[in-house]
Length: 389
Image 1 (cartoon, one colour):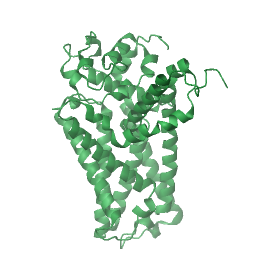
Image 2: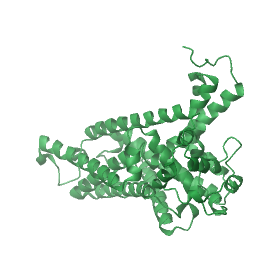
Image 3: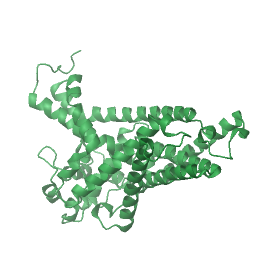
Image 4: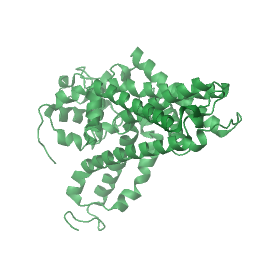
């Protein structure tokens, strides 16, 4: 394991939102108070120490920041006001940037101009593509005496764009995740040898379970843990449903057919809209009021994700309302704004922003499960020695 020292690491983490980390004198109160720590993962204390010492490589190989669910108890009990919870949050942002080998995440987290540039660029790209389509097919084909959304934005063309965009972003997430796996598993591979894919496959259920439930959140001791877990589950369920409707079932979801009120197409959309709107409004209000520990400090990225979610929910439901009211131009205009906002959100969040917590947290728990199995088996017969073909 590398012990190279980077004296600028603490200053670097401050760009990602770390607050007063240098005040910590490693008393260990934060770790003693955290119900999620263990002998193998004594955070936040060890994370702060690695940061203070500038041990960037060891920080990069750790999953501890992802095992923290930010209850805030460590900060409220810190005798030095070192804000350990903010250091853990900043480290998650920093790790997200490190996993992204393109450098985009680092720019989006540390330069607000980069965020604005990405939003404008991707929004305009969507608008330009739609204008080009109508320039080629003829603007006279836009139907204005009634709402025909699929004449204004043909669903199969939109779906093709969505799938291509999703494939690009998926490749980005996959490459970043594989880099994370390489870093986290490095010490285990060096000690025990290459780990067979069968071990990863057998333990993959852990990733699936924690991705959809984030159930470890309930292990926090603070009184709000269960409530926060339920709210987060509500948000994730709405987000996953909306993602599925757009990526997999857009041909069914974006239709000019008027379904009855009891049809599942409408209720799935309503459920997802309510979940996204409720969760995003609560996050924005909480950060505005700063009453809870987790809202006392806010990095710009903490505002961006819920703002995008709320924009998507509002514009999406407005398209629905205007469409049923038969208002052609209001429907088309809000639809364009909705698509522009959602494309911009994906490019600033998927793989490089707050959205990545949905991937990296369960991935970290999964990798720790794999490591534990390998260590328990010691050098099992089915493990291949290092350096062996």
